[in-house]
Each structure stands twice: as structure tokens, then as C-alpha cells.
Image (cartoon, rainbow, N blue to C red; front, side, top):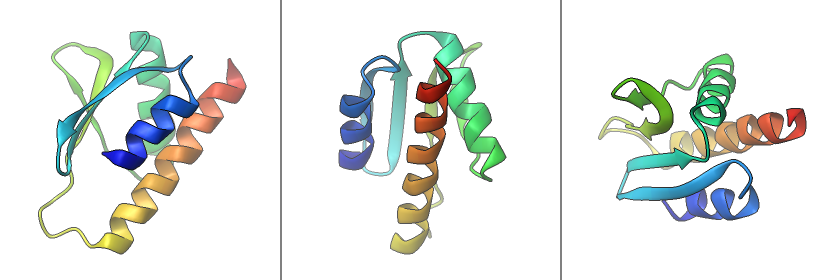
Length: 90
């Protein structure tokens, strides 16, 4: 959650806030469109995330309990790339 929060601070035009505990992380975006675009960029990079209810304004990161630190780091790198791509397109 610390690294995702740092990413949110770096891209305040995209993120509203980050919530969660441990590996269950909610990314709250300024608009549903931002969340949709980040999720789409993550899907392109092989990372599955889940929206909440019927909106992509908040998307969840829900890794399995058996995830390794290496996999966490790779997922965060892909998240960084995805958010950067969305920011550049704005």
C-alpha cells in the first residue's frame, strides 16, 4: 500500500486516494474514466484488477495469499507503467 500511495501522490490528477490493508488495496480515482483507463492498461500488461459495484472509479488489487515479493514488485512496476501511460495521454 505504501508504493501505491506514493504513486497516487505522484499522479494527483489521476488518483483521489488509496485505501486498504495489507495486500487488499483500493485505488480511488478522480473519475470512473481514469479508473477504466488504468484498468485497461493493466490488462494489457497481464495484471487483472476488479472494479467495485458498477463503476471503475475504484478498482481493487486482490493478489493471492501465496504471491511472492518478486511478483508484488513486478505488479507494482506494471501499475506504475499503466498509470504513467494514462497520465501521458491526458
